[in-house]
Length: 155
Image 1: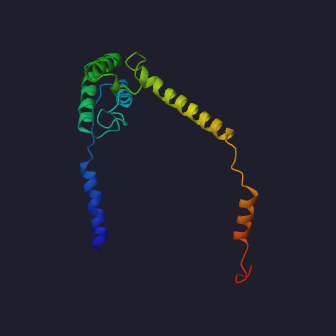
Image 2 (image 1 turned 90 degrees about the vertical axis):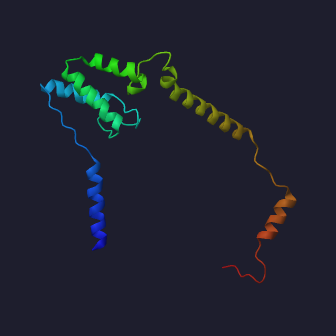
């Protein structure tokens, strides 16, 4: 009985921390714009979640700012520019291709290329190696060691 009580208590306590944000929009288009923007902007705290999915306080503040700007009639570009100006290109899931983001765009390909080069060198080096050959004396000794003794009966 106490076990079930503990499970219920844990379930209730975890749901108490989740906040539900409700926003009233003037038009369905504004709501769609808000949803699109919060899905395209990255949470700076979580880094692997967008604003819509994050429960971090900063994400909540950014969602509130996005809502206020949508309600104020600002365009998507103005809202994104504001966020980039304030937080940098990292706030975007798809940052623009610039010299400052060059490593971000080309880094995975560079790492893949280096990995392929290392793999090819390893394969070539291994193919050039000759297998170790045993001398006739070593073969005879190994055969002698592997033969069952008279006490051991082969099965």
